[in-house]
Length: 133
Image 1 (cartoon, helix red, strand yellow):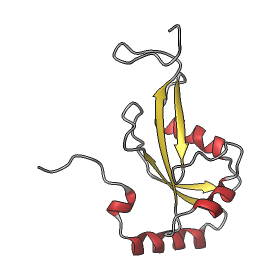
Image 2: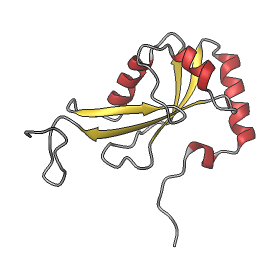
Image 3: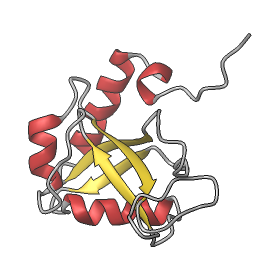
Image 4: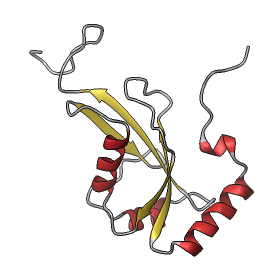
């Protein structure tokens, strides 16, 4: 039986193709960071993103880019979002250029996974995460 699990960017594109694409992007847009954004596999409570590839200004902070992701997935204000790069939470105040230099993949892209959980309220089918709700 075929799996309906969406394939990741790395699964869809071979390493050589990804490296070539990242190289072209960096050459054409030296002040931009090539970023791939994907929902974490185990995070079903948050919408999937409609666009995976982003060219992010180097002087944007992680926090500002999280805002872009929130808008893109139309995340309601009461929902939290967490982003991970190589299974680590990057500091919100860090510049995307600094995060890129430290954590970029060998193919030249920066991979960001996002995850969410309902931390400010309850749904009927979920346990409350805050006491007293």
